[in-house]
Each structure stands twice: as structure tokens, then as C-alpha cells.
Length: 151
Image (cartoon, rainbow, N blue to C red; front, side, top):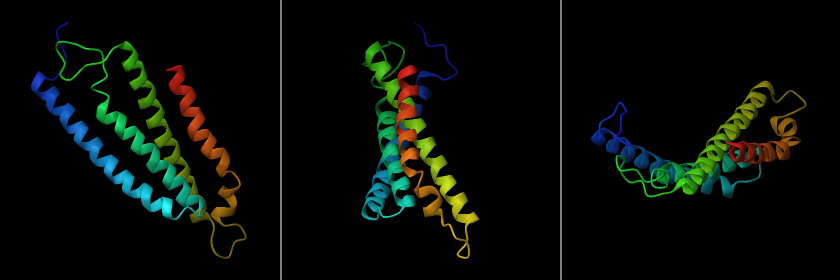
């Protein structure tokens, strides 16, 4: 099968290398944030930040190595996988990216409620979101998992 894309083989190789370097740097940054958030897991914000960073670590790991598990093709560099490894990579890429997006959404909601609440108001963001936090975590784990299985 001849590669008929918009990129030459050299451009494609550069794209793969740059994407892997970017994902590796994301792993390092997310590990640092995960460690900091883990030490302060007393608030809803810290728990959302911890889970967002953890999801980003896993997503970045699979972004780094997904090229290797694609089915072997003569025209592509660094493809060593099979159709089963490709399906596995698709699952983890869907799961990771959707989990990161959902935790980003939950952090946005947390910040929205923190702006809406003031010291004079009765309910603080911890009170508003704290009662729904368990549901948010379940949604951010099981919904992307179900979608990734279906995809």
C-alpha cells in the first residue's frame, strides 16, 4: 500500500517524533501536578485536579506509544503492532481523551460555582459541588470507558 497522504515520509517521521516529545513532556508535567495535588487532597478542587492530572498521564503515555502499536505497514515508520494492538490503542486513546475532557469540565464547573459564591453567601463551592463529587468521578470514569468500549 503506497502512502498517499499530504505529508512526505520525512515530514511524517518528524510529526511522529514531535508528537512523542510533546506527549513525553506532558507526562512529566502531569506527574508533577499529580504529586502536588496528592499531598493536598482535602478539597474537591484538589481531588478533581489530581484525577485530571492522572488521566492526562495515562492519555499522554498512550499518545507517546500509540504509533508503535498500529498495524505493520511498509510505508509508515515505527509500526510494529497488529489489529488487536490497534484496537487496544484506540480504547485507551478514547478513554484517556474523554476522561481528560470530562475532568476539565468538572474543574470549570467548580470555578464557575466559586465565582458565583461569595463569602457573604451561605453556600460555598465545596458545599455545592461536594455533594455531587462522587457522581462526577463515576461519570468521568465509566462514561468514557463505555464509549471507548463501544468505539
